[in-house]
Each structure stands twice: as C-alpha cells, then as structure tokens.
Figure 1 (tube, rainbow, N blue to C red):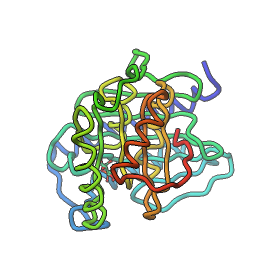
Figure 2: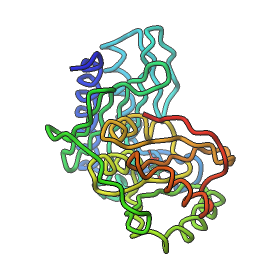
Figure 3: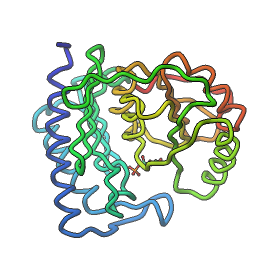
Length: 270
Ligand code: IPD
C-alpha cells in the first residue's frame, strides 16, 4: 500500500475505459483526422475521443486536479496533482492495425510521476506503478534484467516525425547498431519503457518524446529498477534514456560517442 494507490486505481480505470473505446473505434474503421509536426505525424478521431474521455473522467472524479494531454488544451488545477495522458501512444501503429499502441495515464505531484497506468488494448497488457510501490504487469511484479555489457544489449529506440530530426537519429543509430546486440523500433515510447521494466530489452534511447509519452511508463520502469533520465542534448528536444540502474553511465557514454547526447544535465522522468 502507498499513499498513491487511489491515484493508481483511477489511472488504471480510465486507461481501461479509454482503451476499450479506441479498440472499438479501430474495429469500426479509422482514418486520419489531422496532422501535426509533419504529414506523417497523425492524429486520429480515436486520439481525440480518447483524450476527451480521459479528461472528463479524471476531472469528474477529481475536479481540483490539473490536466495535460497530447491533443488538447492544458488545465491548471489547484490540488497539486496533475494528470498527464497520452490518449494513444503509437498512433501510427494504431492506424495500421499493429497492436503496439497504448493508452498512458500518469498522476504527477511536484513535477514527478507518483502513479501511472499504461494499457495496451489489443493484448490486454496493463502496466501499473506507484512511487515506492513497485511496477506491475497485471498481478506480476516487474524487475529489469541484470546488467549486461553494451555489446550484449538489446536496445529499443524511436524516431521523430520531422526529416531533420530523423537525419540526426539515423546517423546516431548507424553508429550504435554495430556496438550492441540489436536495435528495435516498436513504435510506442510508453511500451518501450514498459518493455524495459518487464526485462524484454536492456535499454531505451530516443530524442524527441514528450512528457505524455513517458510520464506513466517512466515510473513503471523506475519502479522496476531502471534509471530513466530526460537529458538535454542541446537540440531543443528531450533525449530520453533508460537502462537498469547499473548500466546507465556506460550506456550514456556509448550513446554520447554515437552522437545521441550533448553534455546537458539530466533529470528524472519517473
Ligand atoms: C510517438 C511514439 C513513438 C515515438 C515518437 C512519439 P505518438 O507517440 O511514442 O514511438 O518514437 O517519438 O511521438 O505520437 O504515437 O503518441
């Protein structure tokens, strides 16, 4: 039990409800509603409907709280709790019918996540965490893998939608690939961090995710024994890096050598 269990339960309940909605909307047929940073950075009607539902349910339950979502205007609250949600993380996968997408809901206090839920509707995987209360996949407590040398690390990454960012990411990935076991690009930052928590990979690095992408899953990973940092590579975008605690410095040095990192200071995401 932690002081944040009620927030975790609310995060879980609304993530499950929004997940059922987006799954049904996908089954009913789905198309792009708008584009954002580039023609391939899309928003579907399901992103918008899911965010509306999350906002209504959370603020109905806790009217004094703040709210920040990927698709709409922020609400400033007075309770000290702010909800940070991604209505569909992995929207391009969702559009294509790939099951690698999730609804992500985090409760934050004083700039850090204290409770969160990440729900993957097509598989039913539900990741939850509370600050100090551990990370869970359903009823199973999660723990990161043991530390391995970088040469044996399975790394997850992701790419932004803008061409100039992709060019930089491609160059860094080309340097990293020969020096690690392999690199995966599943397409959902939230699920990448949950995969690290579950021991399904050894590291995650990506320039460009936003707070709503990693607010809940960063806590899941941290509570499973990862170090999750949001670094400033000096490009105007955040660089999110996460590994089991014991491998962080070596992985960060490797990423820096490969061109991922400047010398910015880090702060924790979870
Ligand atoms: C995106 C996904 C993707 C990552 C991008 C994110 P969205 O979120 O997390 O894996 O590479 O940086 O923007 O747009 O699907 O919510």
